[in-house]
Amino acid sequence: MSEELMELSPENSSVSGFKEESSEHSPSEKWLKTSKITPFIQLDIQAELIEQTNSDHLGYGHSHHTPEAGEKHQALKSHAITNTEKTYTVTRRKEKLSSVLLPLSAASYYSGVSPEMEIVESCQTIEKLNAYLKAKKDDVNAGVPGKFLRAVMGSDGVDVGTVASIITYSFYLDVTSESDQFCTVPIININRANLGSHVELKWLLDSCHIDQSSLIFADEIDLGYYDLFGSLKIVLLKGSKINSKQEKLKHAVVENFHCRKGETIYPWVKTVITGEECSCCTAIADKFVNYSPEILAGKSFSKLLLAGILLDTANLRDPSCTSKDKYTASLLINGAGRYGCNGFYQLCMPPHHFLSISMFTCYCYC
Image 1 (cartoon, one colour):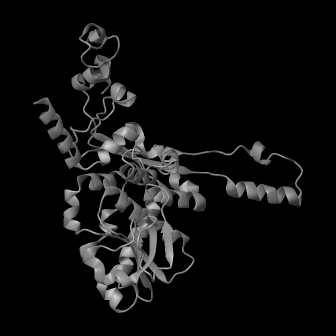
Image 2 (cartoon, rainbow, N blue to C red):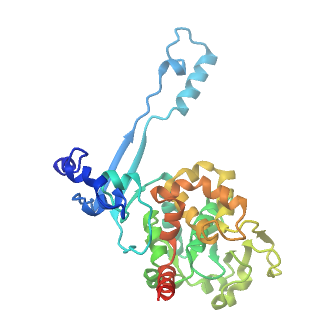
Image 3 (cartoon, rainbow, N blue to C red):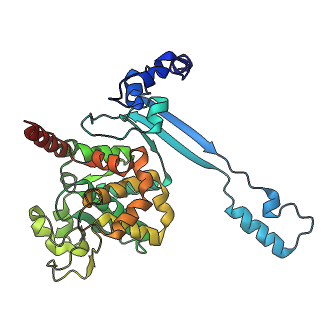
């Protein structure tokens, strides 16, 4: 690696020759094409950051000890952070995204890491989310004994914004619940076998380190069974009406979250939260801010919510996009990583979107 870096050093004529070449391509583009460095296929990097607390600052060095000083000593000691561990995973993308115009970054220029490489920092929030998903799926497999099944699902569709909303809102309901009579689970309204056809959704779940084996898909649970025994409670997101294929379960709907003003609501639904924002993920992020803002500090969790906001608002350019959507997106910008909002938005778009653009461009050219 060091010999190859020496060959690409500024003193080497192959690099210094950039100034003499044609300006059709930027130096960074030429460097990426000519680089001999092969990115790692799989690499796990663990970095332990140990913060040692200064005893003088905590008052440990005083010679006189009083009961008040002792209590203060114990309080400060209990809040001292002694060990923080962060894990990074570098993997090559499984999908070919050559049609997506990703912005080149400084990291690409200096280290030769192409946009096909994805670096994701694991976070405690995602670990807790995966633990929650696994525990709830285990409960479902056991038949949810002695509890109501609270199914969080979208009114229709399985786009990125809907799936991100379902997963994060069910997690929010679980961590804020003061009762143990509910088993809250997100339901993805497609068959598991069809997930592969949603490339952008699968990529997002992979890059956010979501444990897909713990997710529950429509073909893996019989909601009618729970409805038959009166133990089914449905929380409906991004709409006031349930999917037409599940019309027989409409009487189990107990909450509408982020429906639009003027929409017809089932008369028996008592909990109705109207969405003033364009994106449902904006409203969910706002709830996490009020409950526990540190949850949004994790890069993978913020990426999940940011993807929903960008897709729901057409990259913050939709006429219905509000200032709150833009403000929340700026809070979650860490989730976009080195791609920025524009590059990250393009990665989350369905492949047929770029196909239609390419066909339109060719038609205009002809």
